[in-house]
Image (cartoon, rainbow over the protein chains, first blue to last red):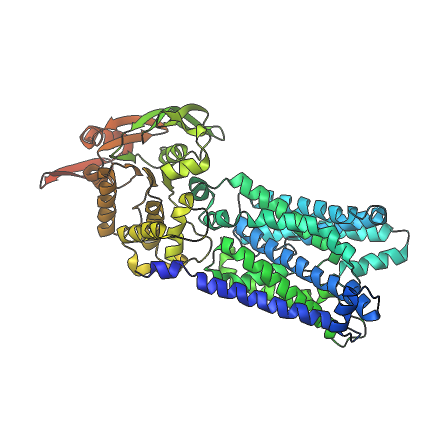
Length: 340
Length: 260
């Protein structure tokens, strides 16, 4: 019997992890070199170590490195959250953007902006995003608790997104300062430009905690594929599992959106592309999706920097342009499941 | 491992589903739960698996209340095989069976002991030829056998199987019953919901007949599967016979209404 070889497909998975890690490493290096200004990385690095504030060192340390790190952190959060949410509701269409979590997180951050809390207490920004995300994930969970059909999920997402967008629009509408409105509007489109290390430190704790919460459910998520009754009879504590994923996704996505604005579809595309390489096991998919998300978002960010547009294309616009048709394709492919 | 339930009452949205059910399940036997649709068989199985809230009563495992066990400790002792063999992702057969080892594992990595348990379960459920196939592409009967293998892989002492043979062909129905018999002979407790009365008669050492949430009869097949019980509870007549020392029963309803 070939069960042994087939179950220990670790080689394929190790290969996948290695591949994604090396691509990420190459993109990381590339991302430090690409930009409007040509800087010499070697000189920049040596200037930093010698504490010399040359132009090379400043561009490297204050612009490109934080931007690259943020792309990786946020991409990983989005990929991982997508995979974890899909495992929890057992539906491949669950994704922070599609189900309205990103929009709610954005609303939370906009409220913080609106009341001027962001400048007073920097921590308020990620906290606002996390609170917004939490409300949306809880709503999604309650709605799909007894019915995880595609239709319920999509409709719930439409409802949450619409409400969050409407409230965001209301805030912009009532804003006394048109320039502030414009700024928020651009921020909502999703971008990683002009971010600093402050942003990295701001979201790092919540992000890491969210990752840990989601990754800790990886073995239980596999069993959940067999339904809630079977999973519980196999020893899964369902309440604990759901709490960890809801809180984990809210922390990671909320923190990410509060810094980058709305970046959609990463959590949809990445798990979908990688699922077959991990034997369709939702638990095994988590780590690869985090790596894949980081790769995808970093690649997208390098692309918007390289595109010869007058004004830099917002990364959220790029992922939406590529992701929305992909989403449509996914729906058409699983059309027969709509009946159920 | 002895499993017992005493004075179990379950209500669901105002309807009485189980009423004052007390049963003991001796080890080393196949105990059949039978009864018409809606009798409460599946609910009783969920109660025994610790998955169903009860109004009153107590379930005990080894003379200890079931709710004093943690989920993981319980998972090593009691395996529950539900009626619906759902699997939400197109995983391959061997990966689904492997999930049965979950209570014994702490990592994703499988050692030889665990792989052996998976291989044995696959052999016992006669699904060796299905290895490598995505489980969502299998027929209903094949899928039921994969889920049975998943349950066997846990190697627990108590197996609760809710209609495990309902979608199988006659040969596999008999083979699965023989397999359950072997497990019981090895000292395991097998509790199985059945609609196939002829197989219940042939393979179950003890039968419990439920109707409208109540236990109406209990004992050997000769005690329970009587003409009177079949007429009263199922509303059918029955033909009885004997072949090579084994008794058989065939539920029968004449074309003329109600007469046998």
